[in-house]
Amino acid sequence: MQPFKLLSLMALMMPLTLSAKDLLTEEQPFLQAYSGQSRQFVEEQLGKPVKKEMAVKPHNADQILQQQQQAAPGAGEQIEMWYYRGKIQYAPTKFFNTAELTFANDKCVNITFANKK
Image (cartoon, rainbow, N blue to C red; front, side, top):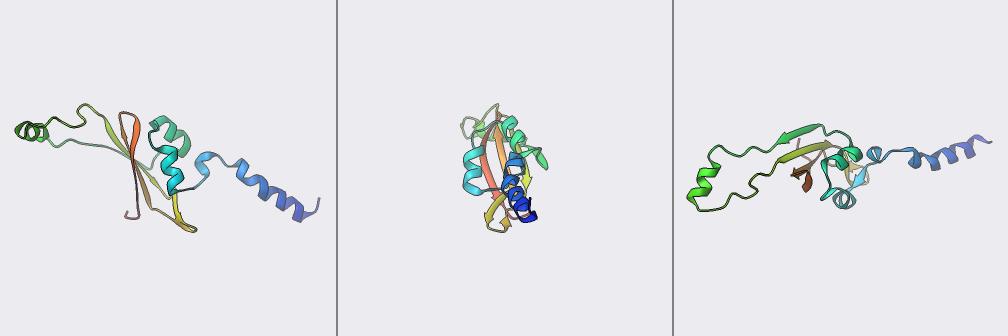
């Protein structure tokens, strides 16, 4: 087989050999693919995040809500934020520095893209 044909064949097969987590994606397909998904699904597709954070309720939040006679929104929910770097493409050669996925009780409820470090 000629080298040119071999290279062409390899170039055509390359996308088939990449796993889902190696593929970079654009904003809208990313939002559609991961909104409402579980932590397990996201980790299987994107790999481990570069950073994880747990939401922390301020120490006097319950007192303030009681004084204002408001129910505690999201009471009992476990909130966790996962951060990924360089996964989301917004222009042909540009990627957001950070994607933040917020999980509430194991479902992705919010996705934020940012270029700040």
